[in-house]
Amino acid sequence: NPFDVYLRSFTRTGNHDTAFMDAFGTDIEGMDKELREYVRRVSLNMMVFDVEVEKKKPDDAQPMLDADVNALEARLLMEAGAYDDAARELTALIKQQPTHAAAQITLARLRLTEDREDEAIASLQQVVADNPGHGPALHYLGTALVRAWRHEEALSAFGKALNLMP
Image (cartoon, rainbow, N blue to C red):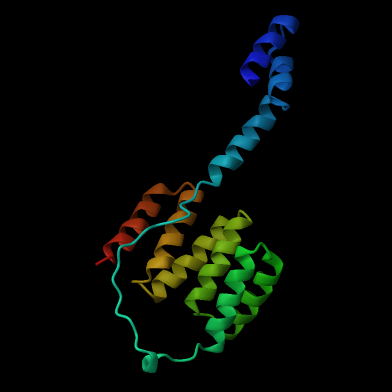
């Protein structure tokens, strides 16, 4: 137990800094930095929606557009941790189709993994401006705003996303 180590070390040395280092393996500034990084990474990884969708008949099925395939591939690369490959794929796709919502959202999520909240927020705000009823964009915008400590705006984005539910 680190607290027991701290107390024993403080009793032995009489020095809070030494006791803290012995107990936690870092100084107070280092622990503060770790805690701030941890708190900034708060995110909502999952939302459950009870939505009934009309099932398509096999004859209604249509092939995916190349841009949608590329966006999906980039998302899978990002999920697998191949961030550089995902970024290259997304950058090329967005250069060809700047308003491709799925690509913009995935790129914004990638920016969040790089602690580039401002870029993610700007991108997601553009997606929402172009597609006001886009639930995933609103969800990720809310998440990015929480990460940037802009809680009032995040609540607004999450509220709009919830209002889209039937």
